[in-house]
Every structure is written in structure tokens, then in C-alpha cells.
Image (cartoon, rainbow, N blue to C red; front, side):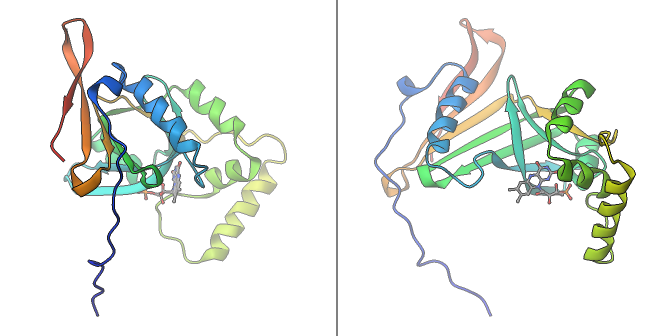
Length: 216
Ligand SMILES: Cc1cc2nc3c(=O)[nH]c(=O)nc-3n(C[C@H](O)[C@H](O)[C@H](O)COP(=O)(O)O)c2cc1C
């Protein structure tokens, strides 16, 4: 039985975005919008959908948590997971932040690289012990027989490391260094505002990023 959802319809608001409102640098712009999103007290402000496609080009998407934004967007995972295999075959990815409570979306696209082992070590050691144990115990994306198998493995790893839990070499960070970002603001009549930042290569008129308005 299908489910008709066509009557569920929201009206997007009056708050617009103009070119003059935007920072020249997309990371500055991201920071402003991120703080406004965070001020709405969402459950986990750092969650973002991460899309990748392996060698065959079949896309996949899942949520991850962004743990840092510098010249790129950093997230942590298991390098041997499905996403790890995809990113090894095709080191390009996209992020989509769906900040619906503020009627905004931010999209980010670009190449992905593994962060340094020092960065992965530093983040891993900052995690709660239970999460560290889970990172060792879980062969992420592999089939498991049942919940008890997971819990048994977790308990084994926990017992094996009464002190510090060492970071497994296959667990660490990626940094997506964008060459394109898009900031979307919902507007009335679906006439939304969209601005795309494209990395200028070479730098154009002293600007590192070209900013263009896109049709909604
Ligand atoms: C809100 C949220 C945050 C998540 N954060 C992470 C994360 O930071 N790293 C991670 O490996 N998985 C995270 N997950 C789990 C992933 O969505 C996914 O299930 C897992 O990474 C396996 O994906 P894969 O099989 O495509 O590699 C998160 C899930 C949710 C719902």
C-alpha cells in the first residue's frame, strides 16, 4: 500500500539572502550560519549527510558528525567500512547539512583525504572510553549474527584494554576540502535563495572564490 504525502506542505519564510549578506570566504559564511543553526538548540548540531560513490558510481549516503571545520570538513570513521572502501576507490564526496528549523541547507563537494595520524590520535583519545572500545570492537559495515555478538566483542575488547585503548590503524579521520559549496535559504512561493561558491583557479580579480546566485 502506497502512502500519499503530497498534502504535507510547509510554507518557507520571508528571510532572504542577498549577495551583500554573504562573506567572501565560504568558511566564514558557514561559521555564521552554523552558529545561527546551533542557537536553535538542535539535538546534534554537527550531524550531516555524507554522500560518496565507489568505483562503480553507485551513490550511497549516511549521516556522520563533523568534528572540525578548518580549510575542510573533518569527520571520523572506520577506513574499512563501506564508505571507507568507496572513498578509497573514488576520493570525492559531498555533504548536505539539512538545517530545516532555520529553513536552510548547505551543500559541500570536493576531494577527500585522510587526516594525519596525529589528528586521528588526538581525536580518538578525546572520545569517551565506551566509544573507543566500540571503534575497536566493531568491524563497521560487516554482517553480524546478532546483538549478543556485538556485545561480546565489546566486552572482550574492554577487558583486553584495562588502561588506554589504542586507536586502531583502520579508524581515523577524513577531511573533505571543498571546491564548491552552496547556501540555500527557503523563501515564499518556492522562490528560494541559492548561492554557490566555486573555488577560483587561478584566483580571479583577487578573489579565491566565485559566488553565483542559482535559480531555485
Ligand atoms: C546522527 C548520526 C551520526 C553519525 N555519525 C557517524 C560518524 O561520525 N562516523 C561514522 O562512522 N558513523 C556515523 N554514523 C553512522 C553512519 O550513518 C553509518 O551507519 C556508518 O558509518 C556505516 O556506514 P557505511 O556502511 O556506509 O560505511 C552516524 C549516524 C547518525 C544517525
